[in-house]
Length: 478
Image (tube, rainbow, N blue to C red; front, side):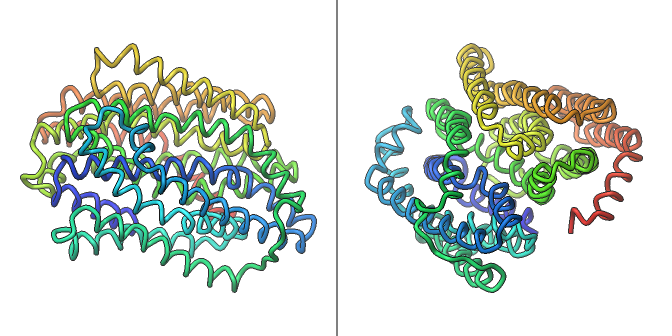
């Protein structure tokens, strides 16, 4: 349901506004707010679930005080951040888009000032969501993900033509307030918390201490966002929108197919590591990873086959054929980046569960150096395409380092998972290359892609079936 709502909204925004001035400023301001908010909130969330589980296992009363202290700390932090960003909105926008004209900067600043009002509510929502997930109350956390795209769709239909792009920004803020009310009242029935000075709670201090290396790592890793928007700000008007649109389409698919499994896996991995149940962790990893990848790839196939047909029809005359072709090629290249990410995140979460913060910091540092270097040497040769290529290569370096680190600590990788990863990457590389260079004939594209997917599914069907049976039997999903 959420993927349908999110894709519907993404289609509507381009169908009404096209890829131009308003959408460039909209995506820039949204990226800036999401980046800065996640950057600060991560001090709390990076190790929140493992530490919450540890505290709850030792002392239920301590877990109540821990949650209450974190809510106080998070709420105060987010209010301060929102006020600072509201005051410094123009300066922040300039950091993210040095190539924007003064008119674009003014418009982006206006949208940015509206967006910052969502920050306190999104922070509290994230803490409550994490706590509910840790206690396996996951339906409500999924339900609240439906409201932001739903509110955005309503704003596009009823207010966008009169108010302009600002209508979507206001609806975004309102949706977070709405989610806050739902999560607060639901959590008050399912969870218990006791407010306490966070700086007098040793577990909160431990949380912040544990989070320092990973927060520095997050700053380094997520610095790719201002680097990317700055690079895009020098391209012609509309390029930022086209790139962000391709990224959001695949990000939506990735989040829908990966997030439920990954969220459950993170909670389970934290418990198994804390209980030193390594054999069970290995079985859970091998079983969930294969199914996760199958879901992601199969969900992508309709878009790979009929991207230009679907979105050409939906966008109408607002998006030109050349813009649509550019968006499709960027989408295909970003598939490679997200495929690497789909594998990497399992090992990243185990690294978090191992509380290997310094390793996370080192990997993030190598990522941003490698990413920046690739952009510098490739921008004059590949143009805008260097962005997804640099992401893929840099993320591949991350994945290798995480896998090596986890396997060194726990020895959980065997030839089966290595073989499965190799087969999947081979198929996806062939699909991507064919559709970029030879996928102009729609009929040939259908035949070639379907043949490859059938071959891939046939080769991996036994592993996928076993994985699904194990997960459903163990109750890891649903």
